[in-house]
Length: 148
Image 1: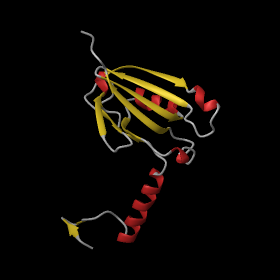
Image 2: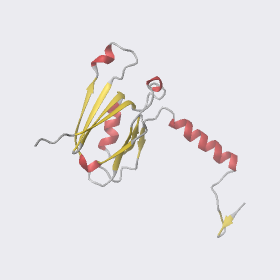
Image 3: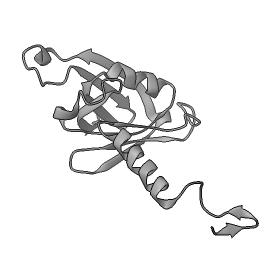
Image 4: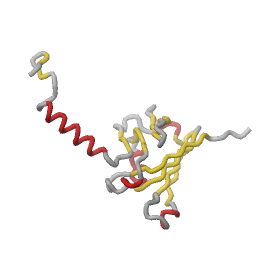
């Protein structure tokens, strides 16, 4: 065992144990669209929310720029079994962000607590893989037009 100042240089367990834990952590992330932060920044801090769109572009917005939001049921979901059920519109000072997915009321709880770090999309076929978590199928970002 390699030690530094009398303490193990690496975490407890063998390399195979560490790799098994990493695989388990990765398995827990399957079907997860919301990455949580520690909530330390919150709405009044300088923390950002990242949105990863389907084309793998990352858009970041400061919590302090979030002015309001709206949660609504999507009426098309009544006619299509695999259509997202919820839509959340987030209104930032310079952009509007629209999320479509399932269980987005749970997403709003995390957002209000300042715990959302990153939101990414997932394929709709994985929406029910984790019924205990919000799932985002689509992210749309539009710049707010200023009136002159």
